[in-house]
Length: 383
Ligand code: SF4
Image (cartoon, rainbow, N blue to C red):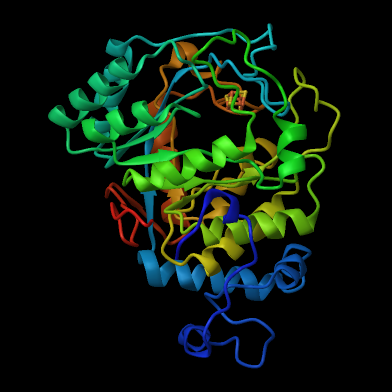
C-alpha cells in the first residue's frame, strides 16, 4: 500500500469475503465479524455500545489467538518532565509553572534500566516531554550502552524529533518509536495543541504542526522502527464520528503499537473544566482496534486507572496485551504528572510489580517478560 502523509487520513480499505470469513466464529448471524475493517458507521455503532458483549468477547478471543494469554510487561523510565510544548490537555505543558520539573542524568537513567533488566523484562521504554536538552548524541550513547549491557528491546517516546536524530537512534539500536497524534482530525488537533514552544529557536519544533507530525510518523516507519501512535479518547471536542475516523486511520497506517487512553482533566491546563473521558468507551476503542489490528501491541494505559481504579487491568480482557509499569525513580515518580492520578501509587516499585503480576494472573493471563516484538513485518520499511 502506498500512502503519502496526506493520504493517511482516509476511508478504510474494503476487505475480501475470505478475510472476513477467516475469523468468523460465534458471530454467525450477527451484524459484525471478527478481525475486519469496519466502516466508519459500524465503528460509531460499536463506540456507542451497540453490542458490548459481542465486542469484548470477540476482542478477547482474537487476543488469545495472537498472544496466547501473554501480557507483555515493559518497564518505562520517564526521565524528564520538561517539555517545550503547550498541549492544552497535558499537565507537563511548558506554561504550567506549578509542576516540579526534573531531569535524570544518564547515570540515573541507566540505574533504572538496570532494575528493568534485573526484573527480567524484555523491553525498556524511554520517555520524556519534548526536551531538547537531551541532544541526539546523549540519547544515542544511552541506547548503545543499554544494548551492549542487556538483551533489551528499546522503545523511545521522546516526541517530535528531527529526522537525523531519529535515524541516529535507530542506527544506535533503538527498536521502536512511539509518537502519538492524539487525534487525526486536523481541526481538533490544532485546537488541542495550538500552544507554541516556550523557547522557540532555529531548531525548535512546537509539535503543533499537523502535517509535520504526520510526516514524522511516516519517516519513523521508513527508518524501520516498530512504530506506534494513538489518540486520546473523548478529547474535548471529539465526536464519535471523529474517533471512528481516527481508529480507521490508525489501522490504515499499519502501526505496530496502538496506544489509546481516555482524556483526564488536569487542573493546571486550559481544559481543566472538561469532563473526563468515558472508561467504557475507551475499552470499546481497544477492542475495536484489536479486531481491526489482530497482531498489533495495544497497551492498557494508566489513564484508565486514573479515572476508574482497576480499569487498566480490565482493559487486558478487552483487547489490550501490554502493561508498562513505571521504573522512574521514586523521588521524582509523582512529578511525571501528565494527568492527575498518573504515577500516584505510594507503594515501592517491588510492591507495585508484585501486585501487578498477581492481578494479571487472577485474570487467567500470564505476565510475560518476552520482548514482545510486533508480529507483523517487524523492521521492514513499508513504503
Ligand atoms: S502531551 Fe507531550 S508534547 Fe504535549 S505538552 Fe505534554 S509532554 Fe509535551
